[in-house]
Length: 124
Image 1: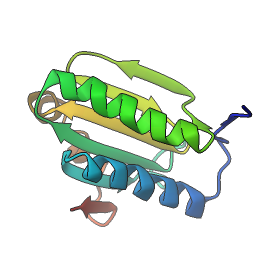
Image 2 (image 1 turned 135 degrees about the vertical axis):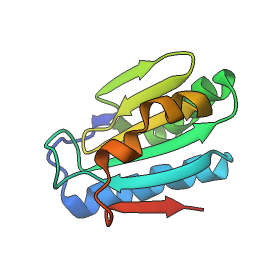
Image 3 (image 1 turned 135 degrees about the horizontal axis):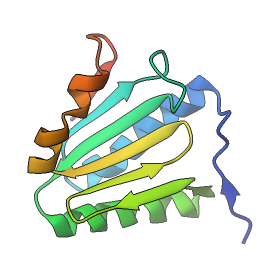
Image 4 (image 1 turned 180 degrees about the horizontal axis):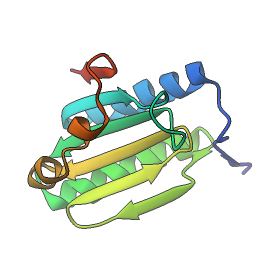
């Protein structure tokens, strides 16, 4: 099977589409408080963060694995993956996925660090 890595040089539109796709997968699996943050104007590390909360540490791993599996079937593999009991960060090049146990999300407050008022989209 030919599996390609996500290009770090994806177009901004492609990055947005990937962020929305990831948010959709999270929503399908009932993740809480899903947001897409446009960070492309603030840092070169990525174009978007997709952040969500889950209600258990087991859900952190399960949801991370689910998104990885679905994207892998489409030929999209992460550049990096860092998973702990209460949080996960998965780097898809232009989009970084953050899955947090609720208490951990409240502690790190990534939204507060990266938002500037008009760059956040809440996903229902």
